[in-house]
Length: 272
Image 1 (cartoon, helix red, strand yellow):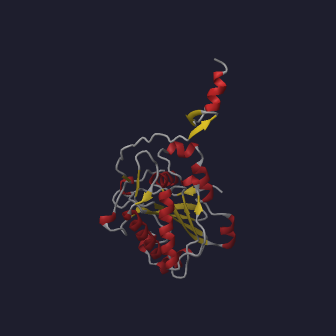
Image 2 (spheres, helix red, strand yellow; image 1 turned 120 degrees about the horizontal axis):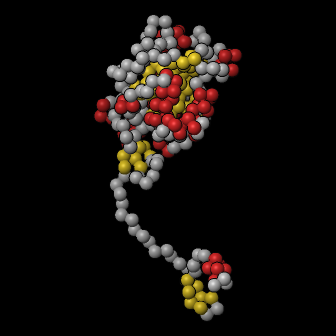
Image 3 (cartoon, rainbow, N blue to C red; image 1 turned 60 degrees about the vertical axis):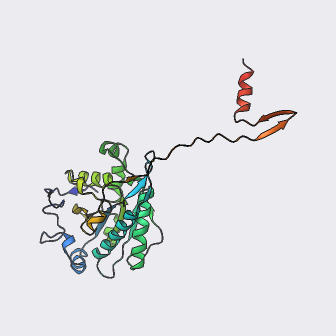
């Protein structure tokens, strides 16, 4: 199925489209009550994709991943509560997917536990999609086939949705650049990433004919004191070089210590 993308002018002030709408009155779904969303969107099959940036995390400078900070955990909890407010009553989230990174997994776990506590999700397992792994460059995102796979799996209606006239609500925990790449390729407009705070949420609506961005990097549900943009680097610790421990042995009266690679050195010595 080909995707018809409606391209709307981007509002620099609110980071939402000036005409983004899935309704007839040009109102953003974020401004509607759950009951209004229910009345408006259940007349035909629709996929509601909530792309969430992971919470703040900390890492070593030599590492590319790490665990959530205390702020990052709170951010994930606020995101979960906001997601709950977006669902009509008696409607559950259908899936929860995250990339294969520690920080997205931990963010997804906190969101899942809160949704489970509030009876807003009824799944036993997360989905892991490596195509959501962080890519800093759009070129690499395209060349390595990530965008092609995501477009096929998420940004169109699958046959069973059309057959069953099914509306779904899906959560995806990913990375700032991945979410930005998706927005840019769907709208041909580069979003303002200066408001892509940790745990911010982008709502993408997929129907039979189009893909719409309802809002991008929404973060007003997070208290100002918890707003963060970047990871925290752990303090550099002194490197203590520990001498390798060798096993001392006495072989045929020869005192020595066991060394790795002795057989290789013995073999090479035969050619000297």
